[in-house]
Image (tube, rainbow, N blue to C red; front, side):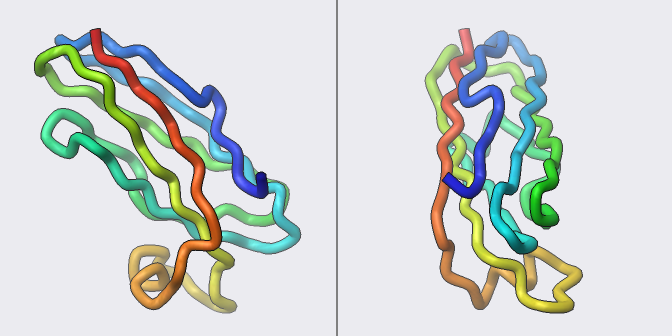
Length: 108
């Protein structure tokens, strides 16, 4: 898989908490990513969009707000970054995802 996330699963308190994950780009070129959530009411992501240079990593922070215990997932979509692109959110509007990885999160 050209993009990996570590750790690939997390458990956070249902009362609220945070988890940090590392995205790794093993592609030969720069990629852009977009993170989608199954539960936008109780989670905040930072960043939602971004770029990762070839062979580099990016940190993603997931914050859980207080809410009922639940299993959720985040899908990290990625695509080659257009040459000269500086805004990943804008660049993703016209792109088709080349693949994705899934992060499972359990709030208990």
